[in-house]
Image (cartoon, rainbow, N blue to C red):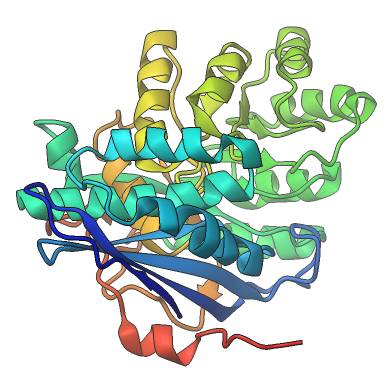
Length: 379
């Protein structure tokens, strides 16, 4: 754990008095070989939690995207973001977010810097909603949804038999929409055969196809009636390439998990059917709200990226409660050894109940945080 505290006098408005970060590694199982999705073999969830304490005693929790980049993300929080955050007023989260983006733009507007800003933004919104005594969704809309439909986001298995097995397993658990991370015709086809024509199916390619491969494989996606194809080519933010693929093949495309800020989404939006902001990457809840407004104006259906289990999962659920039923919660189809939050609202028969407690609904499990903490080492 890293803690940074301020001794500055309290002002009339509540201010940030402490920023604590917690790095965790939680093992998980998923039935795969652990290769294909991440730069290294992937069998542990990297998590960087942040706790913000305000002068009125209210705490807010957030997390930064940290898969395969846990240490530098925590360093960005501790050395770049936290010192600027201490003493800041807590009553205008958007203003704090804008301040951080301006002060830190020298370090880049995307990537690790924005992951760190995302974490504190989520925590500040959590604290703000707690201060108002309301779940976040009720602050954002008068009539939030009580339940949200979820889709099972399967890992990459790479063999038709495994894909068929886990796709059928997800359907047996009540999911009506599945997303693969498969890139080969035979594995994508195996999933469709296993689940039949009535279950919605998508695939996330993670930029694995060349443009020539995409031109060959996207027509297959159309013949299999895929709901969308996600990040078909590299780079994932090439709006011209995406627009050309959609124009040529008429298949719905999704992208955005690797885009940061509403500025990038304004550029990408026309090429996408399903924009996919990731609250732990994009700039937090504040930037998601801007992107939600852009999507509404463009008539696009937001499909947030959310393959995680920390406060970002809860925050995504709160945001989805304010959107139309067409926007689904991504539930990563893995089994972590433990969850860092108590009573995590997981899907039951493919639906998730939105927490009604004040804030985003995240309550830390301190025993888990202690048990799976990554201890600092010297070299």
